[in-house]
Length: 181
Picture 1 (cartoon, rainbow, N blue to C red):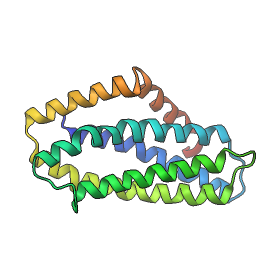
Picture 2 (picture 1 turned 90 degrees about the vertical axis):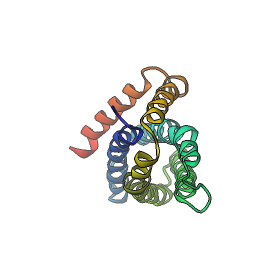
Picture 3 (picture 1 turned 30 degrees about the vertical axis):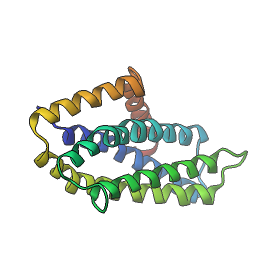
């Protein structure tokens, strides 16, 4: 049986690939190499939909409340820290978006926001994988895990939409070939 942490770690793997792509993009911009604005927009859309709406949505709507009910504190605890990092990530995505939406890319603003986002999310993923998720596995029963996985599936279908997950993975694969090969 798959656990919530296994499901979320699998999504972390995809987010890590997106972070590698973003890192390569801002390095190219820093080195005055040509960059396709559409690629930046697409990877930002991946972050908005896959990382935030889907992945963070699962955590915020289902996992974190279940962990609180299981005795893991929100205030002054790991959940509060994760929620704060979700908010910081959204703000950095907004800044990246703003930096590329003018006639000319605001290179400095994009690089600053993108590099901060990559650092934030890598740190965030490390904390969730090594601290929060092991707590989750220890605190949540098999029945609760199964219930949460059903909730996760329902969120993907109702909030993200049927087939969108697969489209986003295809986008990631295409951008990986272009920027990471």
